[in-house]
Length: 155
Image 1 (cartoon, rainbow, N blue to C red):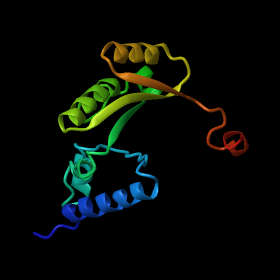
Image 2: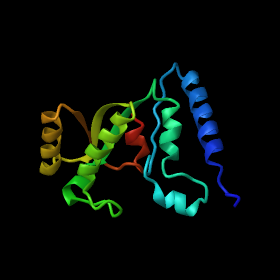
Image 3: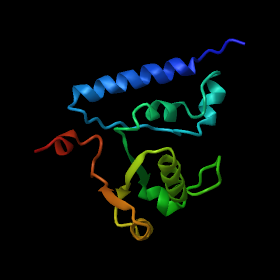
């Protein structure tokens, strides 16, 4: 059977391009990787040949210089949003992801809590992370984002 997606080619090409970009920016590059990094069963269903851990394999090509920052929305913490595929809340998934990345040799430096507006559940989660020895940071909501360009792009 011939697959429509060449997983090995994907990992090779993506890794090479990321290494090139890292070299262009003084050996420091920030990447935002959306979606699931090592359990993407949806992508493997819709792209025959895509492996559920393709993104992770690509990142492992860079593991000696990669630092992972996991991001969670304070809104999702507040709502106790659940991952449908695993049946766990997003805040629990952050801890699961951190452990999985560390088992694979990645440095997981911190957790960023976005869309923060003083939610007590986000404060409690940040304190929980602190007790576990995990550094966390808050990113606050920016009024008018993203449409208020003159404010966002100001001095």
